[in-house]
Length: 394
Image (cartoon, rainbow, N blue to C red):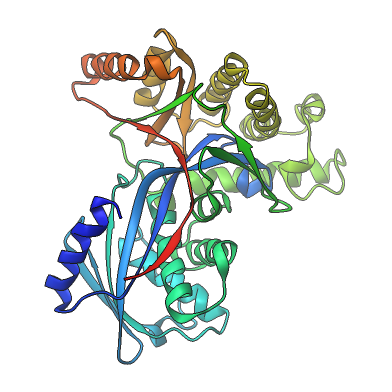
C-alpha cells in the first residue's frame, strides 16, 4: 500500500471514530496524443500514471453518505434518496458533486446504494489536466462496486463515472478519462476508439522513453470554461458539413478525413474550420503515433507531439503562454523528443517525451527557464504508465 493510503487510514479513524473496512484506488491519467477528439467519437491515446486517488469507507445505517476529503480538510453529506431525478445546479462543481454524480449514475441504473462514511485523499494535483476528477469518480465507483457486489467490473465503473460527470456534474466530456483511469495497463498506453469503445494496449518501448509532466501552475474548471464552447463548435461544424452535402451521413468529425479539408474550407466559417481541422488531423496523428511507438521511432513520435501542440494552440486555441513556453523551452533541450499540452488545455500540464538518461537534467533546466520567465517554479514529475483502478478489503 502506498503512503497516502496509510495516512488516510489514520484520518478516517479520527474523523469517523471507527476504522474503514473497504477501499479503492484509481490513478490519474496522461493523454499522450488525441486531444479534444473523444467527444467527436475519435481516437485517443492515454495511459494511467503512478499517481492515485484513494477512497476508504465503511457502511453506515440507512442511505446517508458522510464524506471527508483529507487534502482540503472539508466535509460534506448527502442522502441517496435526494439524488434521484435531481441534477446539480448552476455554477462551478465542488468536489462533493463528483461523489454525488457516481451515486446518481448508479441510481439511474436502478442499483440499490447503501450509506457509507467515506474519506478521500489524492496524490494528483487538482485542476492540472491529469484527471483528478475522473480518478475520484472511478475510485468511488470501484469502491461501491466491490463493497455492494454490483457486478460492474472496470469498464462498467468507467461508464458510471462518465455518466455521472455528464449528467450530474454537467461536463460534456468523452470517455477518455474514466476509461484510462479504470482500464490502465502498466507500461502501455491505451488506444481507445471513442466510437466503438474498443480499447487496444500499445506497448511503450521498454527503457527507451521517460514521461515528464510539468504543471503550468494555471488551473481551470472545465464546466465553467471554454471547453463547452469547443464542444458546441465541433457540433456546428459537423452540421454545416452535413447540410452542405459534403459528408451526408456524418454524425461526428470522426467521419471526416484530412482529404475533406479543402471542401470544408468552402463551407465553414474560419473558426469552425480551425476547430474541425484540429480534430480531423489529430485523429490521424493518433494512429501515426501508435505506429511510431510500435517501431520504437521516438523521433517520429516526438514530431507528432510537436505538430499536435501547434494545432492545439493555433487551430483549437486551448493553449496558454505558460504551456507554450514549456513546450518551446523543452524543444531546445538535448534528449527531448517532443512536447505538447495534455488534457483539455486552458491551463494544466505539458507532456514531454524524453530519453531516460536525460530526464533529470531536462527537468532541472525546464524548471529554471520557467522560473526566469514567470517568477515561479513549476511542479515537474516523472510518471510511468500504470495499472488502472483496484478494490481492496481492509
